[in-house]
Length: 172
Picture 1 (spheres, rainbow, N blue to C red):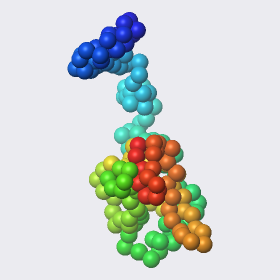
Picture 2: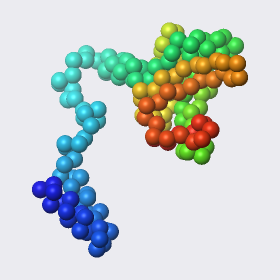
Picture 3: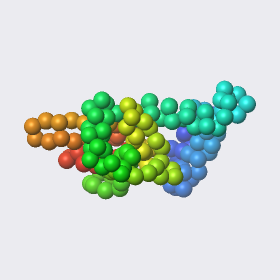
Picture 4: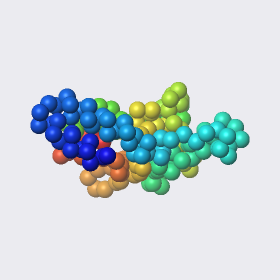
């Protein structure tokens, strides 16, 4: 069945573009369940082994913190920076649309947790991740590197598809 749909799609491309789109959509809707990532599927409440919504939230935060980690040097540097800013409770990591390749990281002090921010605590350091950046930062390691010419926070992100020449922006 899939091969006939694929052949129809190829034939339709040579005649009319809109028919190819319809054929491709038909293939996608027929096989949607097979290709849906497991992470997007929800576990029914009765099958979860969680006693309360607060416990469920804690499990989600624990899973997220494993997917977005900071190295000891990054944690130490954030602690040092926060000593100079006693009215701030942590740092906020986000992404902004800018640069020549699409997105760029932002890192700023924060006095409170935003409504949609995820909070990750590591060794007493509170890092808040903006909602827009949460999927972008999955699997990312935040590091702090210091050499003779520069000192900077570096994000090692396995989700990046490409970067600009200067390394300031990236795309996913």
